[in-house]
Length: 288
Image 1 (tube, rainbow, N blue to C red):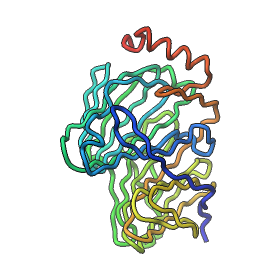
Image 2: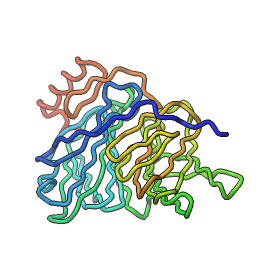
Image 3: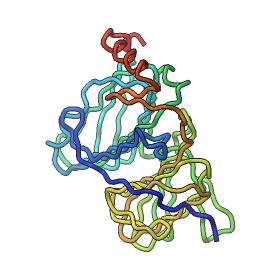
Image 4: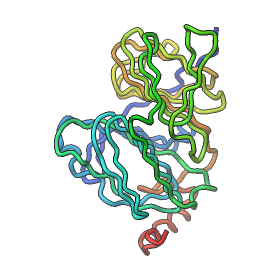
């Protein structure tokens, strides 16, 4: 019998808004060491444009990476460095804010349903003052594996080892995003009732599973839509779909450093936060 991760703690989303009134379901883990290296998960989900049409006008960041994944919708990224990117259904985009970036994320759609996620990832202290970076990944670049036993596994970042019951050896599934501040993996698992996935993970990494549709079972514990399971340490993660389900799976190397969060800035001390606010107010971000 393989050693699998169990559920250590369950967190639920809470409703909030950000940007110009965009409605969000959020789970924050800034002060939870078990969340590291991840900081926050925002789910953007609406059937009506009034919930998202204001978008996210220009705003700053320092000290974090953001990974945005769109199931349905169309947004445009612009930043002060001149980057312009399209985030369309099935695609993703990654930004490392480093020492500072000012960017906007605005809807290119005026009607229809929106469903996507923005994941905040902490940067280690050695990366917080490095130059900002940006990349987008269109749908065709997202690695997919699908069969009747597993359902659909979409690998967005890093890699997982997929245990295939039909063969003697597991296979490596790699996503297009490989270069991040610390090693991490993010996947989207979409499954029907009765389908199952078993993923190999680094035993020293923290792992989490967020259910955005349906419900799944992890080591005998049922996790429902809108819930995030923080998992124990083990080599394997086994997920069983109870109904038509969608799950974001996270795994990453923890960053054992202080976290001080103030709005769009995440640093290691209050003094660094104060310097960040001063830099932004004095126009320093625009010079990078």
